[in-house]
Image 1 (cartoon, one colour):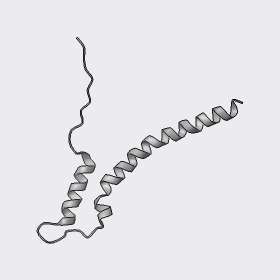
Image 2 (cartoon, helix red, strand yellow):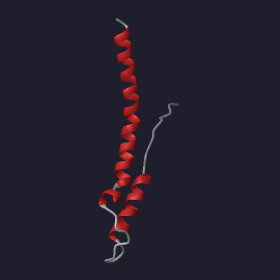
Image 3 (cartoon, helix red, strand yellow):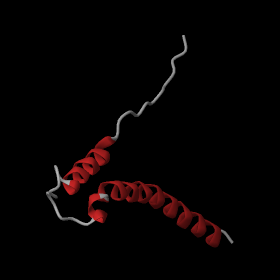
Image 4 (tube, one colour):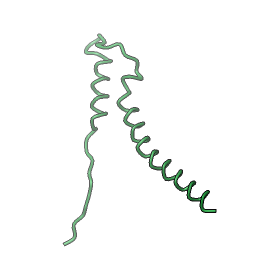
Length: 76
């Protein structure tokens, strides 16, 4: 028997839920706005989580690049 290892990600996640809550509070119920924040802060759960993922990916790449440069420079 062969087993398949599959990872399925369903749903919008925590940042999506936070965005929807802040979006609803920004628009308000009816014609009144509950909070008077900038749209940058309303959308912050989306761009902060994206920046966090980019940071997590870029740090190992930078470290590997520095190690590679050190090996190349000192190998001569």
